[in-house]
Figure 1 (cartoon, helix red, strand yellow):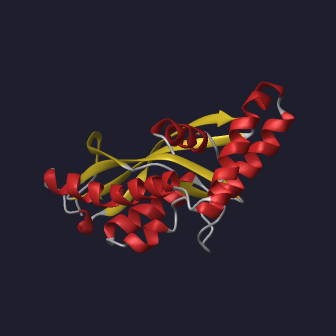
Figure 2 (spheres, helix red, strand yellow; figure 1 turned 90 degrees about the horizontal axis):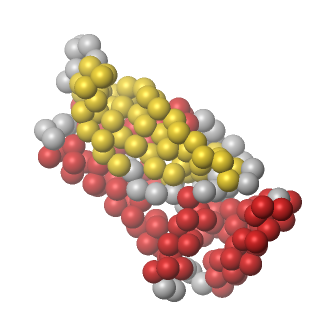
Length: 192
């Protein structure tokens, strides 16, 4: 696959809200996934974090549902050949692009901790703060979220962005790397 093909897959994935369950726990609201991932970061539990990342079965289901939605919408029918081609690729290959997507999201777990340490923050002493912003984009009949939440430590709120969170079957999953936004001057918490 070329880099352009990889970018196309990422573009389709990032506008979708149709990821199948790869975990047994129900994560059906932006607040719930933010809290769950914050706990994984605080506890350095990479295994729990990985349950909320796209995999091949999830991507196949997502493309199948995108195709069904596109067939019903005149505006998106032109995208059907590309969606069908990507679905075929996912079904016939282990798909190196998908592996890179997963790898990038998994790597962001370590990157968040690295940036926190650089800023002098010990996330292991933190607590989940709150969701401070949810931004959504609609594509076909699906919604993609960017979720901003805080982890509080030493009386200060630090913001993390969950970039491109999508759903299917009432469960939300990460599609792109998390982003460390750092100290949130507007949200200074009370010291305990």
